[in-house]
Image 1: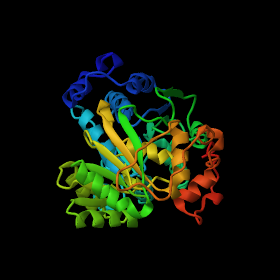
Image 2 (image 1 turned 120 degrees about the vertical axis):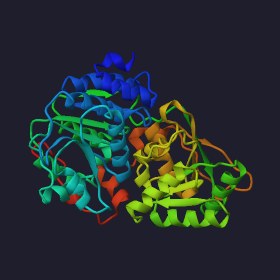
Image 3 (image 1 turned 135 degrees about the horizontal axis):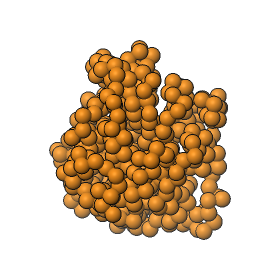
Length: 422
């Protein structure tokens, strides 16, 4: 099926063609008609399968047939968990809607709020926002939702976890009760899936691949290594294979900075991106990486969702994430839009539990590949069928997940997860 069969206008089809796309992906094929028919949608699909276009294209089609928006009003709200994803989604909306008389804008923290307030004065048809900055703008009467028709949760699993749930509950209270709700993500834990279903009305549920699965085009393996030799192994791999564009994930901001310092000592051009960096520094780092001005971008999980780099060949997990779903999002930065990619994890013996949780989630035992000169003194246990069984995972409830993600003193105990009355 071609995009022309999905009920999109010639103006949108022209923009799609100029983008270089000819046929919709399976998730687009199912999502676009459902959204055009006014249905609430919950969709899960692997990273790199075009989820942004799933909601951007039909939203543009719907809004193009209605009256212009009014001052400070928003007709469609797209919520994202990170600034980088907000920028990416906004760029896609602009690209697909370039031949339509619609206005869109993006707002996020880390930059001055006044220019964002000015852009909203005359109203926008589509607003892409991170939750915190959106609430700041609402509290200053810079944005109103009386005309809101559609709300989108992009990377819905992250939007509904304990890091954002309070802000999301506050936002839902200020939105009209009658609206079309769309949720898209690559991963949905059972807990988040149950919560998500409480926010939609008789939704069309779409899943074109097994939930939480990884893309087949991504070749995955691990290098067992002692923790003390990870920096040396990372340098060895980059130099030995002459890699020119590598995205490396670190579990912490301090760790990311340390990796950059170690690589630069070996004359490897590297830069870091994490929440301690200003928005300007984060934007420059990403741009330098895309333009091949640096060879290695070292990131915390802030970059696991929303960073799109054409034909990124290599992703390396310097540390495995505490929350296994983050592994799926990390490696999904490669192998996008049908291209091939490699995802390599440097795993020490103390990360055996994190490794087994990842293998359980993706239902696949990752190959162990020893590197000469880096064979570990502390052996990494093999995972067996028992460890791969979902019943034996140690992530049985949201409390354990969020202690790992947000720390022992996080306030998740105080939050009511029942949101039907929000």
